[in-house]
Amino acid sequence: MKDQPVSARRGLLKALAVGVPGAVWAPHATAAPDATAAPAAAPPNRTLKFFNAQEALAMDAIAARLIPADELGPGAQEAGATQFLQGQLAGAWGAGEQFYRQGPFEAGTPEQGYQLSFTPAEMFRRGLAALDAATRKQDGKPYAELDAQRQDAWLHDMQAGKPDFSPLPSAVFFQALLDATIEGFF
Image: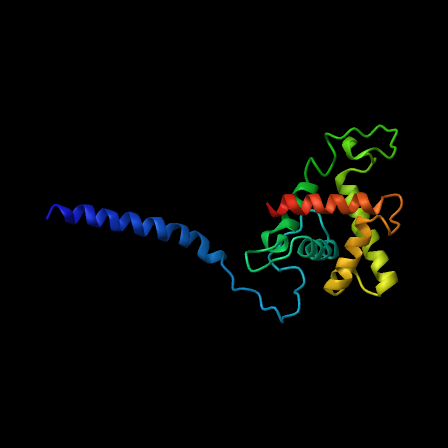
């Protein structure tokens, strides 16, 4: 008879340990995406704090190419890298509140870090607009609507500094995209 209360307590604790986290997670759970379905536009429940709809789609596509989902888990897009980044860009970091912005601005060494006058918000606005303009000119579509191979080719070219996004160097913008995607993923 003495074992019954202990057993009941253990059962209650087990139910709470499994049930409460499951109950918190359950409303947010979604089915695995269908690989054959066309990519959806911006999710209807997503609040855009910084990006406009086109920028958000481009950033989602970039995040999906930089850190893709695989059999081991979600990629940067599924992890919400775009939402993380737009929160950062809408805040103090995006405004460059802690950046030195008096110049002169010259090409520096990698050890010297970022050497441009743009705030992060300005850099992402200019960079995403320049990327979409370049892909529309060359491929007839914005970056988010290109197939995966063309998206990868554009990212590779940006990493090499090939497209001219003057006055923003495309290689600097690519590195900012990569850094932001990694931070947003983790």
